[in-house]
Structures are given as structure tokens and as C-alpha cells.
Length: 103
Image (cartoon, one colour):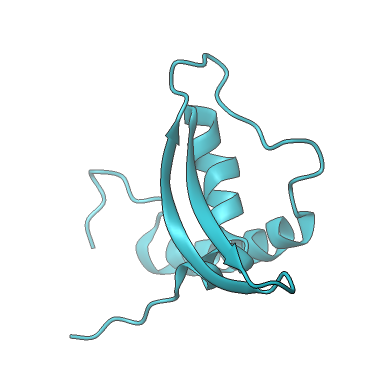
């Protein structure tokens, strides 16, 4: 079986990396990082996984630096989530699967 995938650059540019960090990982003191390689003109040539930054010992977690959040990406991903949430609720009766939820 072949699964559809997106590459890390598309994941980042689509706002999913930002929102994964902002909504889930940062409150835990974690952050998924990427390494971006650019050409001489500043165009992205390659994006690689940079690891998971670990600041779990920081009691309040992590935050983006000032002016680093791209709110248009937040709106885009939130809209996609809301649409999926409605469909999941209609089909499965839940949005976020718990250990007790089976399909």
C-alpha cells in the first residue's frame, strides 16, 4: 500500500509545523526544529529535520519569539481542523481519539 505524503518543506510552509509546535509541543517544553538550506538568492533549496528541542525542565514551556507566529498559517490550519473536526464528529462521535474510542 502506498500512502500519500508531503515533504517537510510543504509541512513547514503549510503552517503545520508552526501549529504543531504552538499548540502541542511548546506547552510541553518541546519544539520540532528544521534545518533550512537556502541558495545565494535566499530561495529554499532543502529542508531537513533538525531534531526535537527539549526544554521540558522549563516549568512554563516554550514560546515563539515576538513576531514569529504567522497568523495567516494559524487561520489556515485552524480552518482545516474545524472542517475535519465536524466530519470526524459526524462519522465517529469524537474529534480527538481517546484510548477507549474504537472505530
